[in-house]
Length: 355
Picture 1 (cartoon, rainbow, N blue to C red):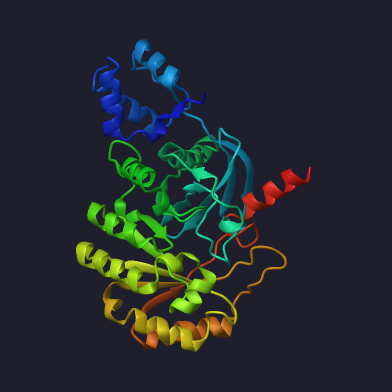
Picture 2 (cartoon, one colour; picture 1 turned 60 degrees about the vertical axis):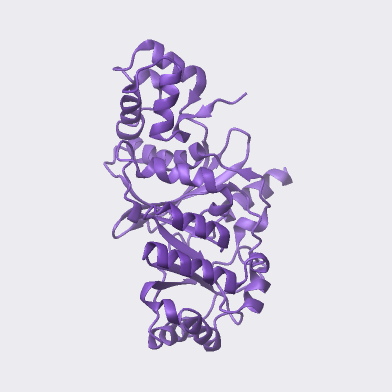
């Protein structure tokens, strides 16, 4: 039976566990300092922790549950990692170099059941949720990559936008956010963390009530129910009226800006008409709404969707701007590697099945 990742324990949970197993509470601070600040790769390297405690940790936990299978490096500095989990499943993690720091995009599920027709993550259905430890370890593996290369660089920003629907793995997501935000550990500021959801309205209410100060992004991608249902089946369960009611609750509760993600698909959702509909949909939220327009990355060779033309993207952008909607065309990363989320994983699984 596989041991649990120690990265999955919040500081309070680790403290309680140690006390329950006969150790002093202060050991938790020592252990977190070793794994998150000094970033040791073996429990035995914790030289101010007594042997009994180290043996206890080794008996119940591990520091490594992910095995690197592939590492793709882009000319722009983006690095995409393909990791194998202990059960053999594969996940992706992406490092992006931004002007404001190093940002890591993490995965929360093995596969995805949301069923967005334009998304490589949904090509393979959900197998299981990731544990909080498996999500945290993605960041630690990226940080260890820099440590091994002798680079004094630090992961400073997190986006929870990889494979899977984060709000469909809510409890592990919240533990993950608590762990990476903790001042005793990675100390990544809440405002440097963004969680993206495809629109699970009931979880948006729950997330708002937690008041975590973490940024929220909504994968919208269409301004009306007919079109959104056609490209995102989640809209059947949570149509725009329900979704926007949840958004209004979040805005009132937190007074924090929401980013609306909008992938531009040629001749599907990129017309001026859709831009005007989107502006109308967000009109009463414009002071706290920010639209991220995303040029589409084809998922595979014979994709049903194509990237919008530069002219269509510019017209869409200018239409929103004229209507007073804050928006930007997202800068692309890793276009010379398997850029679409889930694409590298899907390709690797196909290769293994073909053997």
